[in-house]
Image 1 (cartoon, rainbow, N blue to C red):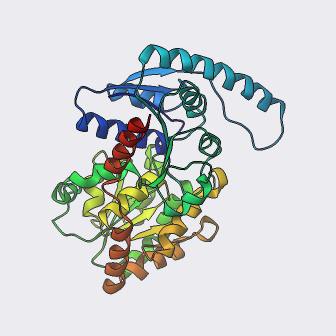
Image 2 (spheres, one colour):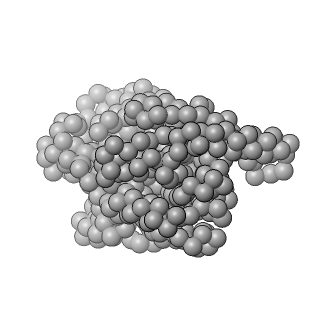
Length: 369
């Protein structure tokens, strides 16, 4: 199969596209993949590192208020469509798959005009502007959350497929997760993650809650700060315990995140769709602090979806403090029955077969063409 993938700006759009590409390559060895993105987005670095051919176009996103810049964006979109048609005619794909971000707008639209089968994947409960626009032209839509389906009434082929990033944790190794942290097997620990870049509010709340962790004497804490916050957070933790706390581990990042997730007892952090897909695929209870600094406040909607199912608790960032953070953690880790009930609810939401569902949807679209 010859496949064009597109989507970018953030890892939340890029990694689902790569997961779909990986599934296609595993199902159909010898498939050819081309990724179209922007040189300014993260995809310009991440995709070539995966050994996937990469081409770029120039495009910017629309602003939500009337402005002269939006007129320029329309012109860039039209040029992006023209450039995309050139790339598509040259590569001759069997299908074009978009995973959100403004870059996939001209690429997927161009494919639809050329009669190439098209699919978009929406990661969040509340869809972005680009995917809402494209839903009028594409052959199929795959959504991560059931609540997203009504937003895509313009498309007849909408499939509740989950997030393909959930599939990659199927091979996660709990023992490797414990070992990588230097923990004995089955050590109960809370994994706190502020996202790929870290979250200052979460870092500060974590430091302020340290005097309280003695109330959970059997629980360990693993805090992933993000590289830019690592030194200051590690120094604060070291000062709080005079350099002697065997129950708190501070790390700038974790390379083998699926293994560590599989070993953890509770996830605490942001509500990025890809991360939540992995968490539910593993059946982890969560305490979510959604970022308020995202388009449409979509992380809060993601978090509420899990909370309404009984799989997560939520603290809004405006209510976040050392006391509320520890209180939320203690309410789950201090109640074994509640922890198990949340884990069960989380597992019921998990869709580890997501990449396979999307692959089958793609095959179905090709047959209809």
